Length: 429
Image (tube, rainbow, N blue to C red; front, side, top):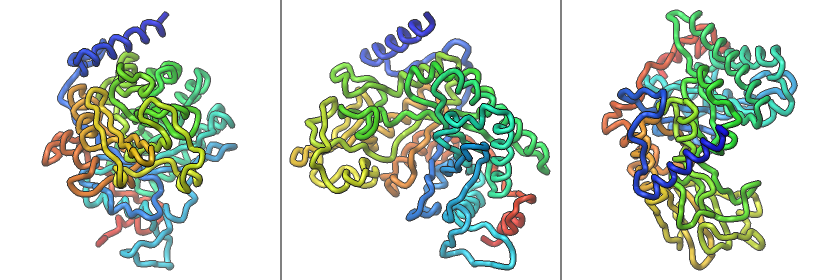
């Protein structure tokens, strides 16, 4: 019965969008609205040909560095790639007399020194911890939390961002136990710091309405500072959702071409709010890449990979936004559904992505609905300068001086790190 009521409510909201009422202008039941401060968060997915200094770090409140892995048997969280902690950058001076931190995580710490409002989170994802069940056991959850805290204090981090996908009520229950264990571990470590410090915890949140319902989000929410809602990849050129081309991150449902929008962001956001999640804890996901649909006539139509090009044969089914639109393609923006795509009549290739108009439209939606901000997947795909999607959204949310972005000092003191240069705070760098 509750599920039927929820679906009816979402349907009403979709009809409202068709009639032009595309924003909820009053709080949902139980919500309180106050002056909002917006988060701007960027995923940095272990870049190998990308330096953290390329990030528009002055426009960001958070960076989520991905991914730390999880031991499928024990639940231990770990990093193992050279680029994380050992890669030498041009400005590094190798000192073999003591153990020092290098790699991407040193570079992110240096960005924290330049922007004291920037907080770096470690994004943890396994993809299989529910299958192998290390977190179904208390000892597994304890090791997960303890090993996460060790990485946090060794690497100079400001919090943790957990990206997992519970599929049913039992997994959601175990996930709530895990979040509670991690939240308690963060608080205990924070209280032991001098002076005491608050470390943040966030989680990814699905966009699929049935998955949101089964997740029991109200049980998880008390442990979280914010939710990174995965409002992208609604249609994909590969995987279980493939077969029909469409809009991969549309803001609203299309009533003219419904098969092109099997999901939409507004319905997802409204579902979280209907279930009791405060609007200002919902951070809207935005892609910095485009989904490729070859041999198609446009959105909502079938597509075909057979005989396509070498790029597709290597499994590369996306383009970075900075490379779009492709030569010979025409770009289309539909503000009624908050989506854009490009199409090449000669090659019959369609690419679904956010252009600058869509990014700014989503920023206005965030402002009107007093959401928690925006998160981008992934930062390597962005354009630079005045064409940067991150920068334009940050200006929309925060103003020219970024005064309405969320502001709190990051932490630079990590006296119990295993790395000597981190213990010293990397003076002079």
